[in-house]
Amino acid sequence: MTEKPYKLIIVEGITDKQQISKILTEPVTIICTYGTFSIEYFDELVDTYDLLSQDVYVFVDEDEPGLKLRRQLNAELSHAKQMYIPAMFKEVAETPLPILAEILVMHNFKIDPLFLRL
View 1: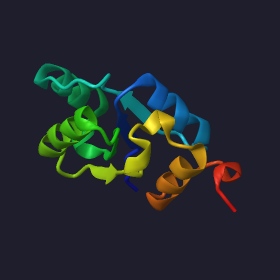
View 2: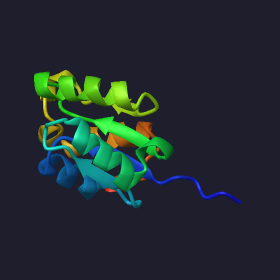
View 3: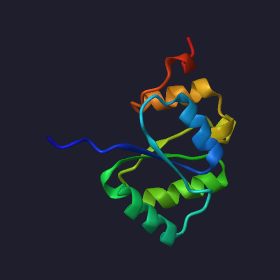
View 4: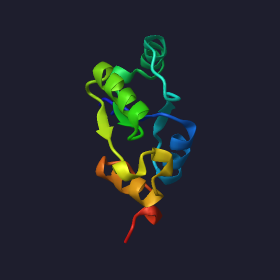
């Protein structure tokens, strides 16, 4: 029996990673791009994390740098699933935890139910 690939989320910064990590209850690899994209760094990520064979999710800010990064990642990882925060929050790190939890649940991540709004 083949083991299902692990889940991997690509975010821009460490604060995005920290916010998402507070909510998750399953092992998920979260990669920070630090808001930049270079083909060399991308190739390193592909090799290190086997991105072409994993369940990859892109969860970046809804500002111009985030949208540019999303486009670049989408061009290189067409199989990646896109996660979006409501535009009013602009940044993943500034999005309230219950909203992040709802987004993660919609993409079948296991989260701490304490973060879900009732």
